[in-house]
Amino acid sequence: MIVPYALEISVVCVGIFLLMVDAFLKTDKTTIAWTGVVVLLAIFGLTFALGPMPKGVIPEAFYVLDPTALFFKRFLLLATVLTLILSIDYSPVYQKFVPAAVPQAGLGEFFTLPVFACAGMMFMVSANDFIMIFVALELVTITFYVLVASMRKNQGSLEAGVKYLILGALSTGFLVYGITWLYGITGYTSLDGIQSVLPRVPEQYQPSVLFGLGLVLVALGFKVAAVPFQFWVPDVYQGAPTPVTAYLSVASKAAGFVVLLRVLEPFVTTPTFQVKVFGILTILAAVTLILGNLAAMSQQNLKRLLAYSSIAHAGYLLVAVASLSAPGAKVAIGFYLGGYLLMTFLAFLVLLNVAKVSGGDDIRDFNGLGKRSPVLALALLISMLSLAGLPFTIGFLGKFFIFEAALASGQYVLVVLGAITVACGFYYYLKVVMAMYWQPPAPSATNIQVSPFGQFLIALLVLAIIIFGIFPQPILGALTHL
Amino acid sequence: MTLTLGHFLLVSGLLFALGLAGVMLRRNIIVIFMCLEMMLNAANLSLVAFSRFRPPIDGMPDYNAQILVFFIITVAAAEVAVGLAIIVALFRAKQTVHVEDLNSLKF
Image 1 (cartoon, rainbow over the protein chains, first blue to last red):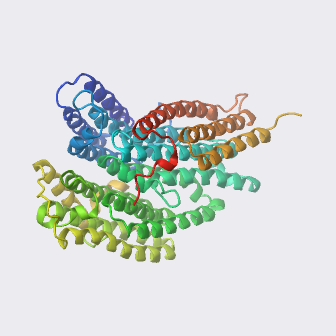
Image 2: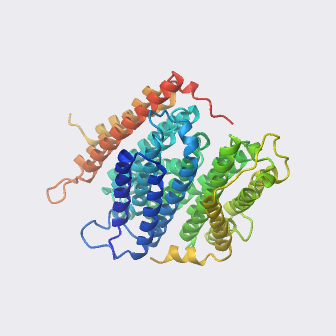
Image 3: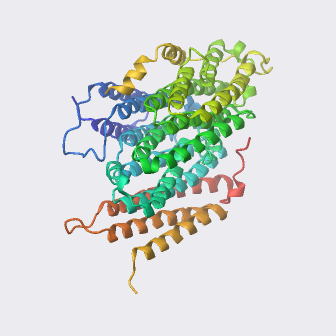
């Protein structure tokens, strides 16, 4: 039995240890990433041996361990492991764009920084106090600034880094100013404290509370890529190194949603604020659904298409957030994000392997992939069908649970809107499938070989998408029990 | 005239609005970055003011917000360190720090 926060502490220690190894290691740097993978998997194993929170050392007001937090800690550890594996695949491309005095310069940091981001996000999903939320969020954001901009000889990466830096810092400004006002009115930085005071806030101060909450929502909207705070997403996703894009779109979004749920909890359970907060969330969900899906339809670059699809998925998740009054909404969000992890990493794994050979990530680079590499084409086919939400995949069940929760809480408009946008989704996801199977390959295109380990990973992800799409019980169980 | 909480909040609101306007309107990334720091300091000012003007509990003022201010200052310093490094790298690659010139990522 180990104390719960030993998980985060050990992840931070792993990060520091890997940095030390990087300083002294003279041979192949991919050893660092493999060590990280093995140790993080060991820590993943430790999550099944957690004891209860000890009393008095770190108060519950700062750090909570509930089924949601534990599920997302496992989720984030797995996402980090997958990111490290993608990074190993990506390292030849990465090295081309980093000024190197010695061979493999910069690779050590590229493999280590995701570990620190993982620690920050694991703190985020347990944070129950605005001080903790702020510090954990910044640990993640600053790490991502470095990761996004790390290909210093690639103008796209640098531009993406600067855009992410400016907009991320702007959202930080909104977050702290929002926290200020929430603290000023309620007198607490902890969410439990705010919850206890909120029903007694006098009427003349209620607009100030809503103002503070609105600013915090703007900041979290940036993190989860909700419209109208999504404008950084396409550029940053396209410019960042591909493993970082995958990590950003899965892990950072998931951690953002967990914080969003925790911050909203006091407000949606207080009758005086409930109606207004749900109103704001409904509008956010509706515009995110519409804009994300419509903008994705005209994209020609697969990374940009996945960026807009990531906005669209944030829209479906916001539908569940706007239906928080239904009992199944929280579980639906966890399940959807779990599925999103599998589908997105599968898509990026294929994208990375194809882009390495074709030299680009436009959709036309995937022309004739069905002939050039049947394995990759089949994997991308399943990932796209699952992202679109075809039955017998995990993507379908995720959308099903979300719409079920939305119906239970009476959000009929959002359900209709969701159903229409799912149809749009089929259009742009199938565009990729059409390119793979119906378009002839470019004359210069060569066949693509995948390493045995890559094939094993692809098979694992494909199987998980289909198995959990038919038997969702293991994930649902993990979301409801410690 | 005595200073009240309102005065502090007014100044901090002005600082925040100025910072936000700067981020929206200015075209030089370094100036934008300075404006972002101003927004964080606006929050610091009002946090300290809110904490100072809160009635003390058992004779002790509420220090939570003031602790948060120290965290914000530290994090802002880290952000500047990373941010300026990225801006310098951008300048080396493109010889410019103007937002109009950041246009290689387009669909």
